[in-house]
Length: 156
Image (cartoon, rainbow, N blue to C red; front, side, top):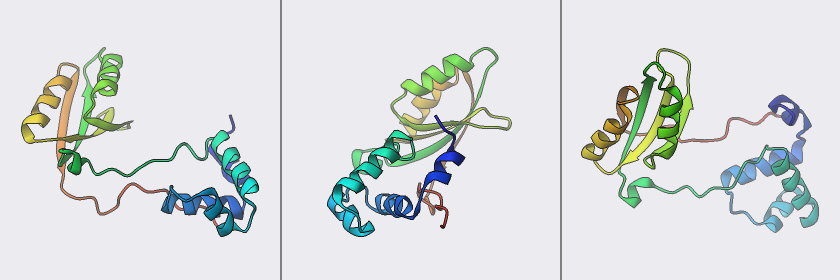
């Protein structure tokens, strides 16, 4: 598979317009997208298929509020694995349903995970599952002034 730089170099103005439109509303129909970029629906569909096959578009997602599902606390958990526990820690973090994303990072800690929990008691139970494999540093997320978003697309 080509690297990201190669993928970006292959994108033209129409591809970028499609990506911007989908980032704003992933539920746009193929017909709406085609009208937006002044192409036929089949041509638009082929472009989207190519963007998916090359990995530029990785999926289409609903933005669901965890608080509405009974998980009002969002937390950031930095984790430093104990010696020899890295692989076990990764396996555990992958299995824990409260963890919605996890990144391997540079610095003193190896991972930063984001979790959603129902209460401080639930947070404590989650941390208790992790600490046999590493030390944690946890922060409750108060607000998110910048929500998860797509980075700026190149201008052509």
